[in-house]
Length: 310
Image (cartoon, rainbow, N blue to C red; front, side, top):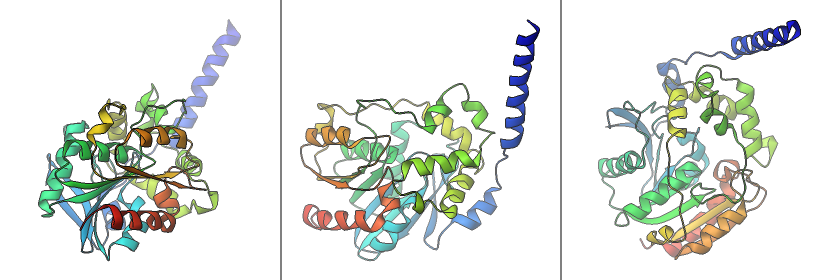
């Protein structure tokens, strides 16, 4: 009995010490805005909050949507290469980047689609091609399905949304569980670094600047609580029946070394789509547009020129 009490006490002390070492306060919003806004940054008030976006270039419009735990900066490579011949629009989704948490805690499908439409109208864009990675790909698919009149093309980059045939644990599963509230305050940087190494196929491309950006923007005021709220929201997966509602030309860009969403599942999704093209990206992980932007843009541009009428 005495030994059991000592073990329990030891565990409590260990948890307390780890908590003390990893406890992190939010970083000042102004400091992060000064560091992470760009020359093309803009702000749009919608749903009671200011949404951070960038708008660069001319020509046919493209909307780039990032995934969970990320920000519009994940598209830096694409923006640099495409913002000449195209009008490239990126945004920080509510709860991520510099946009901060949604004031009402609303992370519903409807909120996101309203946001995209508000942004399109604010920028006076009639139609655009919508590109999404991971959770952003799921949202892009919803948008193409619900608003075919404004979505001229769809690009799914290692997107979520198709039922998984095999389970794979990731850091976001931790945030959904009992430890989720603790993660809102205890945010070890090594966990961010480990996750990036996991989703990149080439470890040498995980730079300190990349780690710092992901970590610091997670510490934007309210973003950690928002991450948990967003992860607890339920979003419907596609089925062979419902996916036929997406009628626009669709391009699958898939990093073949994705530990979370395997190529085999993506191929099943692709086979159910009525008007789709599939391009595998070898030696790239879950974020191929960030890891190998030159190779992914090289697949995107010819497809867009052929599939999307000006």
